[in-house]
Length: 210
Image (cartoon, rainbow, N blue to C red; front, side):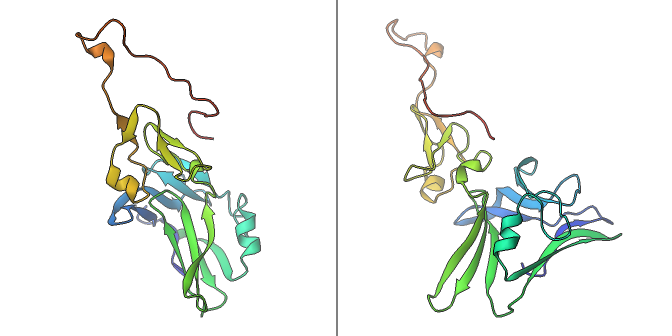
């Protein structure tokens, strides 16, 4: 990633993007990506399914992206730059210390993660997530999924639903969402008059995305 462009070729219209895996053990293209804004403005965005923007960095102001100054202020081992000429428009960075080993990825959960290798501990250190909270990822838990940062598992299903793909959920990839355990009773002509469909109250939740 250091030195690589993330932007668009103005001659061909081709975008360079980072795309997530479908899951931690499936390298086929997933639902999330990071790219230059589709309108070709001077900012980077995170996208769900190639079209729904759920994070914007803000426009490049010559030193940093306006909505994420903390990333550039606090991490002093990067040198970010933005190039805009007649051929290309892209963001890139280099490491001030060439001996530093880092990598950036778009996680299957929909978060961009930047990590550095700590030699004396022989492990990767997470520098930052973007967005910081999984629940700020668009459709992080998929259809009928409930996101709760305070839960031991961030994604759960609403009552009456179960994971649509248990394998994906066991791997920590929840975007496949949940499916109904039982069909609607209104479609059952033989149902008893004492049972039927209804509503379940869910407190302290909101529908949609902020």
